[in-house]
Each structure stands twice: as C-alpha cells, then as structure tokens.
Amino acid sequence: MIACFGLYDGYHESYFPVDRLVENHQARLDSFKLNRSGAFVEGVVTELRCRDRRYRCHRRTPNFFVGAVPVLVIWDQLGRPYFECGRCSRRVKHTYIPELVCRRCAGLDYASRHIHRSVPGVHRVMRWRRMIGIDPHPFAPIPKRKRHHTRFHRIVARIRAEESKLVGHLSDIVHDLERRARLRGILPK
Ligand SMILES: [Zn+2]
Image 1 (cartoon, rainbow, N blue to C red):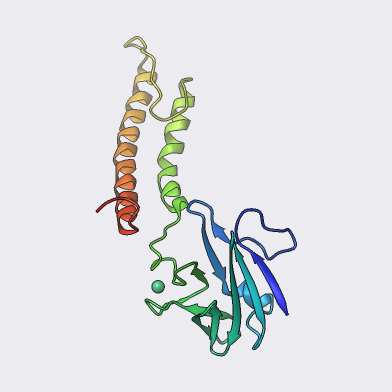
Image 2: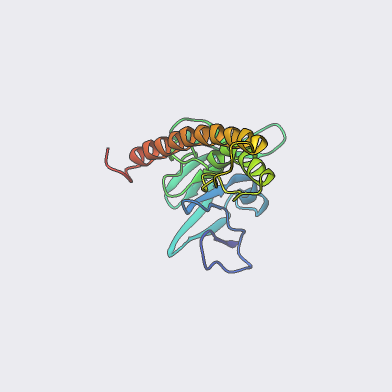
C-alpha cells in the first residue's frame, strides 16, 4: 500500500492533512495520524511529500523509517504510538523534518505562546482607551484634555502604566526570539 502525505503548499486534497507550524513552515510528522492512516503496519510503505522532496517511509518494528533514517516508535498502554526523540529520548507525538527530532531539539517554539502571554495587558489597554473614546490601539497618541477632566486623566495614567509594562514585555520577547534565532543559526552569534 502506498499513501501520500502532503505536508506543504500545493498538496492535493485527497492527501493526508497538512500538519505544520505555520510561522516557520516546519513540517512535522504526527504519530497518531500516521498510525490512523496505517503507516505503522509492518511492511507498509508510505510516501511522504514535502514540497519538492519525497521521502519513502516504511515500518520495520520497532522503527518507522523516514527515508533511511529510523525513528523509534513506542506504544503506550492505550495502544497509542509515540516517537522517541533521537536526541533527548523524550516520548513525543511530533517529529520534525528534516532532523527528525522533537520540537525542543529542533529549536522551535510556537509564536502563539508569546502572543497569548501579552494579550491580557493589551486587552486592558484597549478597553480603557475605548472608555475615554480615544484610539484603542496600544501606544496610539493620546489627545490632550483640560486638567479638570479628572476621569480622563485617571484612566490615561492607568493606560500609560500598562503600556510601559507592555514595552518591557515586548523587549523580552524580542530578546528571546533573537536568542532562538542565533541558536538556529539564522542570526550571527
Ligand atoms: Zn528531543
């Protein structure tokens, strides 16, 4: 049996569902999905399509071979298969192409993790900005008002305080992302 897995743009609809990290176009294999498609049955050959590259995969217990590279498959008590990361030996559901290691060892992170962390502050700022009828976007200019508009100034003070926290938070994120980019060789060390 030969199955086709489209992991990138331009995959055919009848192919296996795309499974990738959108933000860095990193393709990954999902052990549950592969299992459901029958790829872990002994002797089954699966064709993996990764943009213009093709990997011929096959199952030879206890490994799943992606091309010539074996990835160990471990089954839990409920009969669910996991990959064992070849670098850190963690049991994982996803292994990343082309290194065939776990997310951590591939040096990846989800951008959404950083975005969600900053959302609470952003929402507060936007709510307060709407309360006084100004541009709701954080850091947008705040128009001047007369000194006796005490409610306005009280809320503006809150907005300024929260926005300065956001600045600190954003610079932490930038620092974090730069560090990761250096680790992955995207930026010079
Ligand atoms: Zn690992």
